[in-house]
Amino acid sequence: MGQNPPSNPAELLVDHALGLRWTNVPASARAMAVTFLHDSLAVGVAGAGAAHADAVLAMAQGWGEGNVAGVLGRPGVRLPAPSAAFVNAYQIHGQEFDCVHEPAVLHPMATLLAALLAEVERGEPVSGEQFLTAIVAGVDIAVTLGLAAPGPLKFFRPATAGIFGCVAGIASLRAMPREMALDAFGHALALVSGTMQAHLEGKPALPVQVAAAARNALVAVDLARGGMPGVRDPLSGPFGYFALMEVREELDAAIALLAGGHRITEVSWKPFPTGRAGHGGIVAVQNLMARGLEAQNLVRLEYHAPPLIHRLVGRPAKPGMEPGYARLCLQYLTASVLVRGGIGLGDFTRAALDDPAVLAMAQKIAVVADDNPDAAAFVPACAIAHLSNGTQMIEDVTAQFGSPAWPLSPAEHGAKAQSCLDFAGLGNAAPALAEQIQSMEAAPDAVALIRAAGVLG
Image 1: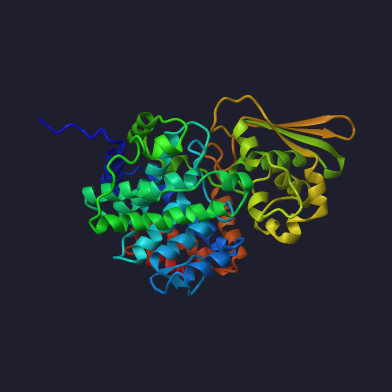
Image 2: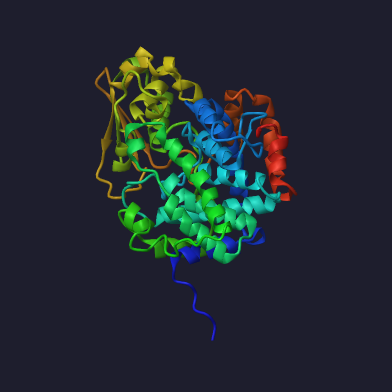
């Protein structure tokens, strides 16, 4: 008689990652792995100019010397692998421009890409196929954990679910022995952290939590490589991940989805460097302006949206805001669109954040929570503009720009990447990066290909 399949969810997820082969990945998932690799690299390069990024780099340099792994957007800068993972993850998430899986309420690539880059640079080179397969595997696992938790967030899933995605991605990348991979997955529980308090307060500790998850994934892997046993039920144990960190758990249903495809195809671009919950309102205001709304004629604008939107970006705009706070403030984001015509990487300087015209406009904008029972819903939503002549303009939002239902075009994707590299002063490298990533699948050395584009130290 054959063996019974494992019932421990950690074993199921590790086996999924270890069993994944590029030849079995459908073309749609392959394309999205390449696309979001390019997107995440570009965002990480721009992150060299994020608020506090220089201080994070200086801190990491103080942890010890090493010439092992490069830092995105910082030519010539190399660090010990765990330090590079920390800095790169901070930079990828530091401006809220990295891709997101909306139903899981999770940014899967910030932790994963940073950890994979560091792991490859400290060991044997891997092919483009291996690297892309590890991306698909890591996103599958992190997003599965997010989908398995349909309740409201208490902990910050890009960090908490992200570390498990990183470990799974490294296990896939290195074809780790099953027992070692399970030990590493167990160690991830001991190293997981990151609450929603930083999000609530709009503090830069948010990307720090993502950075710690990327670094700690390497620690978890190294503990397993050193022969240290990890806990064997890190997910569903009485003191495991779901019992402690999530309100509800529907893990069996989330794992079952893996038989029907890969989660990378469900990931959304971020067309704006802001919290994803703000994007619907930004696009709604852009559309209203295209229909004739003018800032000087606006008396009040209400954005009626699911409770998650109000919870994540319903905070008030105020003088002295930190960039991280403003990126999660729909009042500021939509006021910037109304006054300055848009919202981009350059709209989070001290002078931009304290612009009196934008702050005055922000006071006319309100986020109103509707009665949507879905704790992870971003849409449907509706913007209602009340005008000085007594009339109203209404704009319905049924999909998020950048989502699989409304994806960026190749031209829009390329323009985003170009803007990111321009922001970092490396705009001339944008064509080379795009060209190199398109050839990733056939590359014998994935990281050498990225470094050849001039964006990795």
